[in-house]
Image (spheres, rainbow, N blue to C red):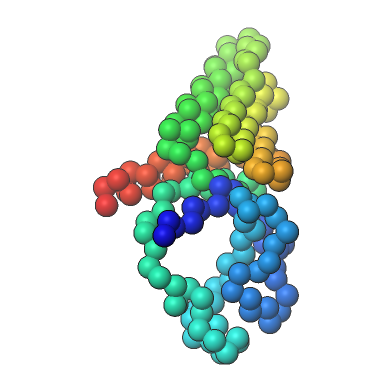
Length: 187
């Protein structure tokens, strides 16, 4: 029997708290099957047994094979978007973010010389099997790379999540993904 593939897209936010005393192992969702709303409370199997009167669904689950790394985009506050992207799709995203950082460096160098250097806006789009990830940022609108926000839009199966994220956070997210890929290849 083939194992179920991981969800293509999931998001989590601290505002999505289930009702107190809710103990359903897999809450019914009106979201598309490719999108998963995730809220993981810090519950141990013993606490789950006391609350629900049955064993934790994770305690009795069969051992899983290691899933491929997923890209988690920390967009701000307590919101994250988790996207199952192939490794080959994240490399161009990292290159686009590095080019954007180089644009900010060029703007800063020109400003130090007393000139105005207009840089092109960065646009990155990855489309694959009903999943679309788009990043956009104009380096001319922000004072520095540390204050720059990137418009992030992730669409999967009719659900569209659009938000802004700090450029530095996105760069860190791509670095973490690459480190996870390297660790999984070494294991």
